[in-house]
Image 1 (cartoon, rainbow, N blue to C red):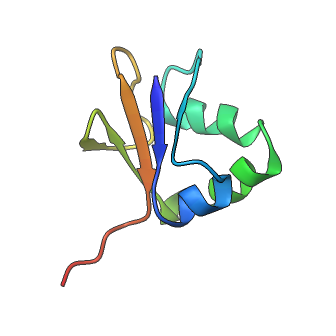
Image 2 (cartoon, rainbow, N blue to C red):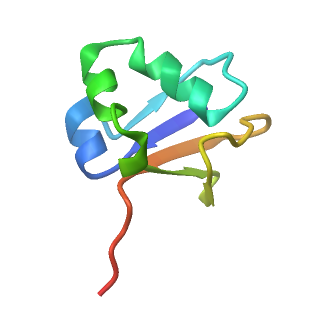
Length: 81
């Protein structure tokens, strides 16, 4: 699946998008797999309360299932104006 990173998440990890092979069943499991890759991923995902996730461009929760998902995007909460 494609995993996209936006704003400071992208800056900490160092890439905007990557193809990820995963056995994760939920977003939270995917995050744990990513955190184990390298310290930069662990830093980006250190505080999940500071992150939002979208599955195939629909806002989701971290306990959401990944079955059939083609794209996961991580980004900080948006502020309006």
